[in-house]
Image 1 (tube, helix red, strand yellow):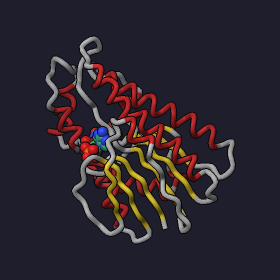
Image 2: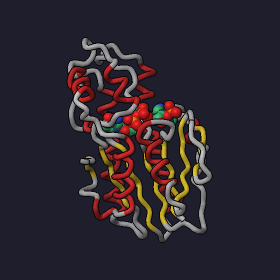
Image 3: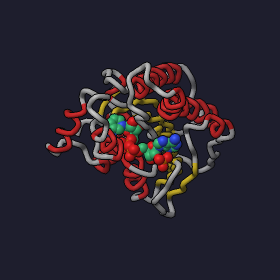
Image 4: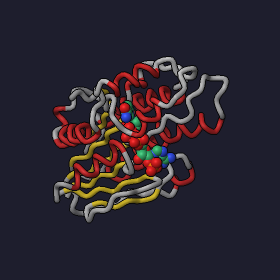
Length: 237
Ligand SMILES: NC(=O)c1ccc[n+]([C@@H]2O[C@H](COP(=O)([O-])OP(=O)(O)OC[C@H]3O[C@@H](n4cnc5c(N)ncnc54)[C@H](OP(=O)(O)O)[C@@H]3O)[C@@H](O)[C@H]2O)c1
């Protein structure tokens, strides 16, 4: 059996990943998010608010005796409040880093601790963003959290090359995808984000990727890790 742990499975890319994976009887999916709108016998939803540090202290990964592949996909993400530095609410600054980076780092730490000794295929995929390497005004928290996620990925990848039963570790930016997150970008007022029009035009020109196509590509890559071009990469459809 293949076991997938995925954060942020209620909407967007995470939801599309669940639907893609449960189409195959060999897969079981555990999804963490604050809400859920999907039921399937191969899918289990577990409530988790990643902005709450305390929720992570008690979190354990299941142990398995029949696993052939175990995968963690840190997909949950949020832009948070868009505001120039100096005008940000402290709680928002802390929450955006907690959801996009710190919680993912904590889950990777626990995943490696739990499964390092399993002599099976193990993979961690961190859903990153072009914003990890391109600064956008008003997005300091999101950009810096995704940059931290990329560097954590690189360090873990390096470490895993030096241990027994290594785990594959990758950060993958999904491209510009037609999800709730993109909707919220198009609603930002232009005086808080100078590149807003670019995202409005991408949508108007039908240039956004569909979440289901991105999910399909991600699953293909996870099933054939040799096709992932590098530790840090971007989906291109
Ligand atoms: N769409 C794009 O163009 C794009 C581009 C680059 C990168 N990404 C990345 O792709 C990933 C998925 O985003 P999406 O586009 O699919 O957006 P989305 O539709 O807004 O989905 C975000 C997911 O994250 C979950 N989430 C947010 N805050 C959470 C919290 N506090 N605790 C638990 N779960 C939380 C949400 O679930 P609940 O609200 O139910 O908790 C939801 O399932 C994110 O990491 C995002 O940064 C997206």
